[in-house]
Image 1 (tube, rainbow, N blue to C red):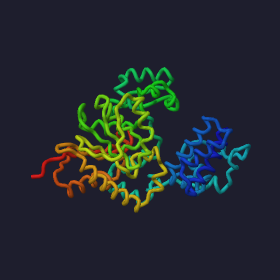
Image 2: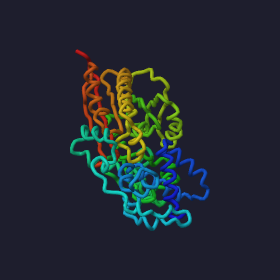
Image 3: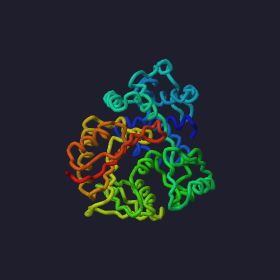
Image 4: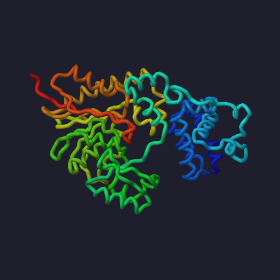
Length: 387
């Protein structure tokens, strides 16, 4: 496919997403049915579509409309590329630009430039204050690719050397002692020896830093209460010297790949359908808006509604209350989100402390994209005897 043909494909896929179809479903279907598209073509089209999703509002303003064609014209302008050279109408390229399209578009302003819905821009300002603009604009850009080195399989230097054998360049990142930022060859990770041998796992640097903040040491009993795919359960197991960690999720199918991942990593992780015991540490990485990770999943920024956010907050409170009952006396309850919204983070913790006797806050931190990874929040609460 030519670069222009890729843009035309992205226009058509963007229209489907605007009509309500999930982005991943649209891209997967196109990839499977477009036999003419090679791996580089699929990657390039995906990048174009995700650039449009990250900058959905500003791209429409720059392109002069809300169609897939207008938004992709906006993306080309955001990239600083020559739209006339792409919109030629030749072969499989998009049709030539009209005079109206050439003159259409303007510089985004206010919430348009932040690429946030108006109602979410209000929440960002309430939550982040002076960091609002920097955070919102960071979420418009592609995220770095990070790896977690598995200390059960080797050192950080050994992991870097192993990755280099497969043409992958990575460097340590200051946010976590286990974090590597991939600077070259990211698309080769899944088939590299370093990944297949369990020496590294894909995991955001701030996600790793969340686990670094947990009071973990070998011998403690640990439950990952909302384990999902199990990335943090594996990171906790490594800090425990191999395990064991119990993993639970309200939707067990999310953990389907966890046993194989644990075997590859040399970690002891046991899936439990219904936790029946008390633990020294219960970790809750709760369902949330995902606002801290919208660089990676930008569709959520435009699909989320105020009622949905309220429902998520109610679910988070229920999870905290349920998980607290599984903490042994003197043990810890840790709460985490990949959100930058205060109502899901610090306010949620304060509300729990206000309604729950016998708990104190030991530590908390809000990670922002300016720290180098995704936006994450983590709090560690300690159980104390009620006097």
